[in-house]
Length: 359
Ligand code: PMV
Image (tube, rainbow, N blue to C red):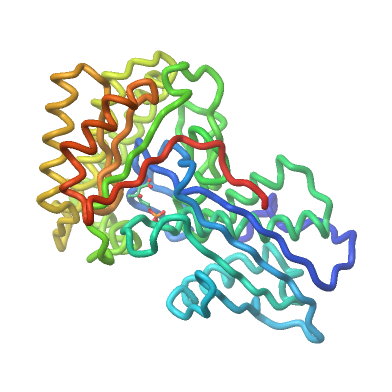
């Protein structure tokens, strides 16, 4: 089904060769998206922090061809080399979005991408990668049709979502809300919305330090994980709970109650992993070191009274969230007490960021 709102507007310019580059960050969900419909709309709404330094840089050059093709024609370079392993994912993405960019059938695309974080760090690059690519496609649409900025970003989020659900939350900086919720009239399953009104100053400068505990390829991909939610015995309860947690988190973001924030964010992370452990088949993505660092973080929080908490993606790597004003004490704690749980003592220090940039 084509969503009319996002079809391409009238072409107003002729272009033979052009290129655009964007860098786009990853994001970390506070209330998790886990379970989706066949059109990659979510089974429940989610809220995330957009990161700053974990990002993908993508350039796309568009060259007009002699003849129009049936599919979007492209070549893919990753970190400077021809890449075949990501090709099927991009092919599928292009087949799903070509009706929203009919002009692309007249061009040959050369896509060149690289990540700021090591490919083998276990950090998912689908959110940063799909959002950076979608922004490049939107820049070309803007060049041809002269669309306005608000439509540009809304469609970029809509298109990113088709590539990877959580990617739609990387189009804007700060805090993002994706998925419809009865209490929030602005919310939509089709794209994310940045929430910036009434946010407590406690959240203005927040940090995310990512402990690299496992750098291997995930045993169960997120796509399979989402699918397993279709017959998970707890799924309906989960979707209801996620909706409640969204309302709770929206209140916390207003009030700035950081103890409540820690309690909610950690319960979301553990619920995500408990769903993996209670489906059919069951699977476990956390590693023993994940549990050890969780234990240490909770002990540190109790002893220091600093509101530092953890969250997890669909993997073993642990994200540590805390207000920037506690950086000195928390970074010493991470270095002295947690870094030896990381592969080669490797962790990534990041912040909540201001969103993608055209370069
Ligand atoms: O966007 P996907 O299909 O990679 O799924 C992301 C799922 C989680 O990272 C586990 C949660 C989330 O909301 O980002």
